[in-house]
Length: 290
Image (tube, rainbow, N blue to C red; front, top):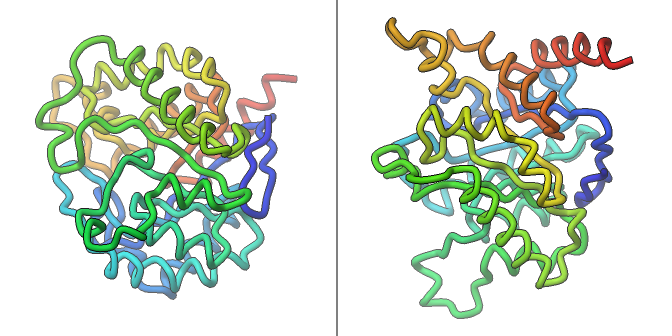
């Protein structure tokens, strides 16, 4: 399988590591560390040295309870870094749900749009501008860019207050299949589309681990599969059920283990903060597959 993106066809016959670069002051793990252009680019370069296959740049926190960021503010955070990151020689993903940010990033040469809303978000101000494109239109108008469609229950402000009910796997799979089908109806080739079950986005710890246990079912959608377990709070809940929960900076080992399990169950791309440790672990895993 290959993932077609703006400038690269990513070979997914081996698992790939997507390094997270948060350009935010308030992300749950490393917010504020890379919210200057210089520090963000240093982070990009370090992750590549550590073995990242691609980079994911995000300008707005999607942690539970995070408040939305205005489009102009997100553009100011993202674009200066994208402008330089596209020269690093690897696929550059931009984590955004706003059509204007998508378009601006793609215009600068970004390869992938990683959308937690799966292109469902509508700009409340767009009614005043009927010509304003939707996220689907932005992606469909581009000839080759990659898109990652993620499942999220409700929205960051409410998702953990009212988590999903019922059979999580069936609901997530149906949503992702329908989201991909909507894009394909707009003549977006299936090879451009990746899907992400959205670990932690409106799901209980048990539901998150149900998705991991039965992850292979998601492969039936026929698209590249991306998963992000890195530093998620569910890892703390399962590793210390009768003790104080692990803080985000204490979740390295569970994060790497979850990524390895995801790869063993067929995931194509793991999205992680800890690139070096994940790459090392994947090399050990690969050595057992000879």
